[in-house]
Image (tube, rainbow, N blue to C red; front, side, top):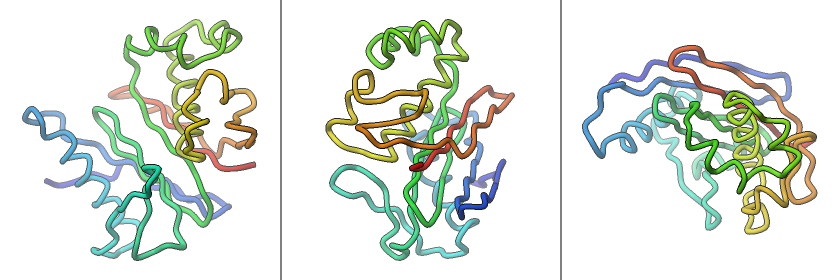
Amino acid sequence: MSTEVLLDLDFPEGARVLVASLPTHLAPGTRQQASRQAVEALLLHALGEADARVSHREDGAPYLATRPEIHISISHSSHYAAVALGPKAMGVDIEEPREQLRRVAPRVLSAKELEECPQLDDLLRAWTIKEALYKLHPSPAACDFRGNMSIAPPAVTGHRARIIKEIDFPTPPAHLCLLTDE
């Protein structure tokens, strides 16, 4: 499988985000494998190292055993894989609009946030911010997306974050959020 790198952006703070498209026609049960292969291809593109394999800590957070000085965050959607790399912790999330967001929003967003997110695009943005926050600071307390996270300002369990970049992809539609500690 050939992976097309759609986006490769560097940021002044040393962060880098890469996005690849996933094949549109995959056999049932192969999307996870395609996502993993896309992440490996993005890492090879970014680092030029074939042995830059992803491992996971006890809390599920990814890391590169061969490059411990590099922080990594990973996200997948139906059509995209995203990888963020940098000298300090980051969270990245990429999501595509789907009606399921309307159903889960009351469990994820505070009453105020729900009021501020009347449209599906608003919910999509809020969801990507909260997912990226969780990836920035994974912990049992962070699992309470509604009570221990906020989108304005972005914060999780008392840690304030700063959005580095948000990107909307037109086709297929998706929203990406990259953030780090303030």
